[in-house]
Amino acid sequence: MSRYEKLIHDLGPRGFNLRGKLWVGFLLLVILAGIVAYIEQIIEGQVVTNMRDYVLWGVYISNFVFFVATSFVAAIVIAALRLTKNEWRRPFVRLAAIVGFACIVMAGITIIIDMARPDRMMNLFIHARLQSPITWDVIIIPTFMVVSLLLLYFPLIPDLAIMRDHYSKNKPRLSRIYGFFALKWNWAAQQIRLQQKSIQILALMILPLGLILESIDAYLFSTTYRVGWDSSNFAPYFISGAMVAGLGALVSVVYIVRRNKHLQNYITNYHFNKMGKLFNLALIIYLYFNINEYLIPLFTAKKGESEHLESLLIGPYSTLFWVVSFVGLLIPAILTIFKRFRQPRWLFYIAIVVVIGSWWKRYLIVTPTLLHPYVPIQGVPESWRHYFPSLHEWLITSATLAMALLIITLLMRYVPVISIDRLAAEKELAESEHKKAAI
Image (cartoon, rainbow, N blue to C red; front, top):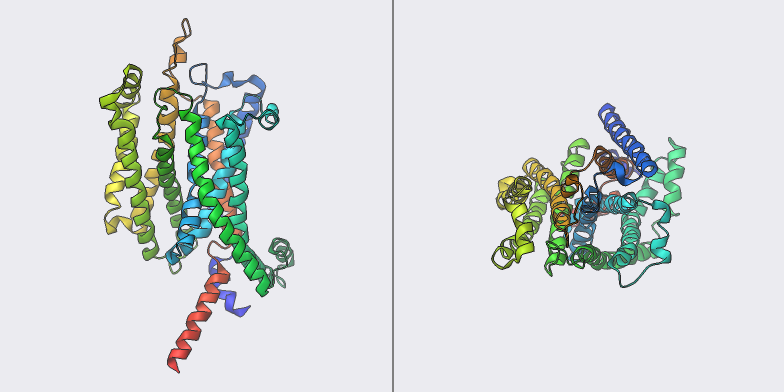
């Protein structure tokens, strides 16, 4: 096992230092506060939220759409880059799988949270109607979740076996845990062939599944015929937005992992430059679809749509809309054209801004449209005509974000973030070729 020693030291599991323990403690406190708020929501009903007959989809659905969008990073990086044999994607693949899996899990949980009667969840399956996009969502989310988990797990098996053997003497309990998940891996030729074939099949599956998932989410909105959602542009608009949110989240996570684990030799400026170019492409594509979504309708919109656009462009949501559009999209798209801003630190700052903007963008997609109902309800309280999340909604939403971060944190701590087995094989191959050249 000597050939793995340095790689295990650099990439293997580490205990939490004080800062790590404080971070986990903070996430657990946020989660606990959200659980308390959710229990009260179940007991009291959704009256504790600010959702009413006008805004029946509030911040929970905004958050759900954000998680679904961010999970799309698994399809982009793992499938698209793996199948095109882009070798620079290697340091990003496992982290993309971790981020994608954590986000799709939380997307499923967020839907349950949004249900006023979670005890009736089985009705979604028992009384499913195939003509309903909600049923399509119920089918595609668990499917995508399973494929994401397998695409994280299968490439990890050799590394788990390395951890099993490495800790067999000094940490037998930890070795048994890794051994359980390693499935008796011993690098037999048949095992390797089966693993590689399985990964290839999963990579081929997750890309269309990701596109279907994003499209179905868009159909959930556009098939309601509401002003602001009634657009044939919505599916590609959602897909392009998912690319931006997913890549922004991945860049942020990779930078933090690189810095905390001191992986500058494994995740270099070259890798960030390449990812920055892909990020820039995603931003430009999304900018194009935003122009189609908001600028063109200004010249063709009917009365109801004009009122909706006015609320975004010059009305009560205008400040948030323009900040999200310029600071969260246009400026990052311009900056990442230049190599200087594709360096790790700059790209990290830009990615953080884009991720925050992406979350608020989902809020702008959901809320303003619901405040323009088909037929305004007469004699309702004035508060129904406005919406901003209640404390309960903020606590529960923050808890879901904290849970996603906790999943990512724990997985990054206890599994190698870059394939040790693959790196060792490449190192051996390079040394062998160097010796041949010397001879």
